[in-house]
Image 1: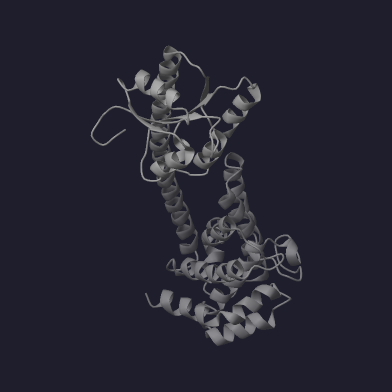
Image 2: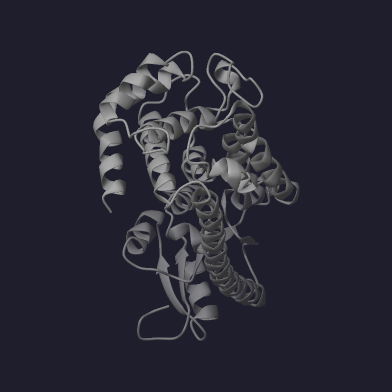
Length: 362
């Protein structure tokens, strides 16, 4: 529409002045009509102006109607304008081609005035309704996005509370979660920045590993206080009890997976909870998995969990320095830990040390 007139603006393109005058006489009472005798001049006008509908002749000198239609469809802004193809051809293939190229309708010449006005009315109404529908879809889509954001936030809060509850059974604060998540994030980011065969992570997989890391000790909720909180070394029997916490945690998550089987975060959490005490050489627990049979998230979690245990005070040990902890990781590369992931740690020592300092000094 023009800026100063509420009438729809129709652009018509035909190299026959008689046809243009005929269209003007039929439509100008109800519409603003801009006539052009060539496709080139019409496209120049459209470069800086919008119209509500285009009447486009098929057979013109210079650019044909198909050429103009192709140019319109190649422009994201102009392709939304409804086009009625005008043709004097009786070749049905031309009509089909025009419709396939994006024309909304066609009208054979010579046309009756009533046929022209009816087609124009119909296409303008359809375009208006289609625009309203698209607007409604966008509004509803945004509403759904907001609902999903709220649900995701609620789920994150729930997972964080659950992770904190499990961590505080074994530690005085939730810093263990923060540190192990920080270590996992460093390794995940390194893998994402330098993908290698067998170690390529999608963005979704990378995010899930970091988020699921918070739940790695979920099963400790089921451990008896007499064992979990014992101020000293565990007996062999007590250690066997502690070794069951990955199984208990996996059982808890299994129940959630029954109802949310397509939730990638729950799947990742299940693998990390169940397998983060497996060892590269197959001597870990609870399943004795070996090498790459251990899920990659669990292999990352193993490094993060052990590094934090080494650099933290326990009733039966002092906190090792980061340098001492690195040396132990490197010594156990290829036995306890995935050697490729350990090599990543070698290149990110400063970042690991930053996590130790930043979290502990908060």
